[in-house]
Image (cartoon, rainbow, N blue to C red; front, top):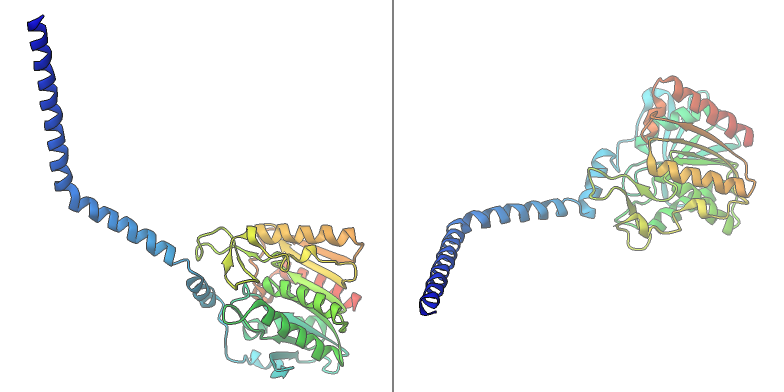
Length: 324
């Protein structure tokens, strides 16, 4: 019995020695590797911080404005049109009248530029406005509405409503836009109705962001983001304001609507399909041109010499003129 006990104690002592030795090795290894581990952690943390900070609202706005400037020189359009920088109710507006266009036409066009509510300007849309002026045979007004984040979505809306009111006093008009510009156009029509201002004869949307969502990769960390009406910041799409979801509006008294969108633009595609469903429910008049892989939400595309582009412009001209 004594020898068994002695053997057990020896085994236990050996085990303690082994464990102690292992702890010494681990501790020594940790202190030896500690500088390397700290370096790895620092690099990972710095990378994470850098990635996070690069997706701030400020950086996203900067990137968007780099792609779509908020200010450009007034274009000459090679003498193909009369280009005038004017103000309507204190809102800067670019008026473009193509040569040969009826300057005294009782109906004019108003086009809202896109840019996710934070970028873009009237001057960047001059070529497309010239094309519209030629096709519709009327002057085209492109407002430089106020942009976020320096201003609010309500400021942009106020500017557009002021332009509608100013032009609508003496003229009939058709109204439209692309991307966020189409979103703004729909919102302005709803306000005009509430204020009992003259509504547009027709409303057109080119790849309209009709629910306020946008794909911001690689400039943003999320698959989509929203310029929030509440705090003028980019928010997750789940927090979208119904104010920007125009397909939820009461569309029963809306004018004729012409819609064009591309199936490859996931968010705009879904929102536009929702709008069509809403228009059907209230028996509103509308026309749809659905494309696939044709363009990427840029009005400049329509100024290119492409057959499909001409076909879309022909459709826009045909339906808008017929309705106005």
